[in-house]
Image 1 (spheres, one colour):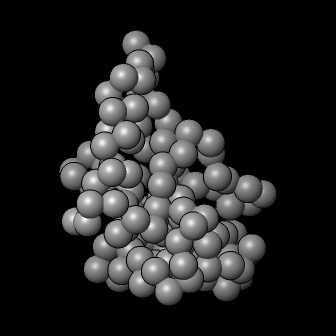
Image 2 (image 1 turned 90 degrees about the vertical axis):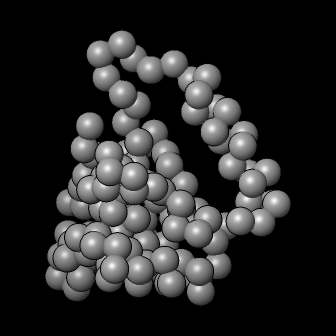
Length: 118
């Protein structure tokens, strides 16, 4: 892990520790592609998520509800979130070598619903 990556991770870790949680529920978090990630990095992370990562990528296939918008960023976001929701309680993260970030804003749109698993 590079020094610059560590410098980015510590503030996020600090924020996650000081933010209070609702007494009856956890924060709703989704995992999406980071806008600053290059297409090459996004494609590699998407390939991993839909392959070895075990994300359910069926909804981003042609003629499926999350195919549009047909962009690398949107498809990667769906795949990243699928992986994150499925494995977050078993050690899975929303990192993807820096290609993804968490958000409290539900990225669902139109007929494309992003999973959230409490």
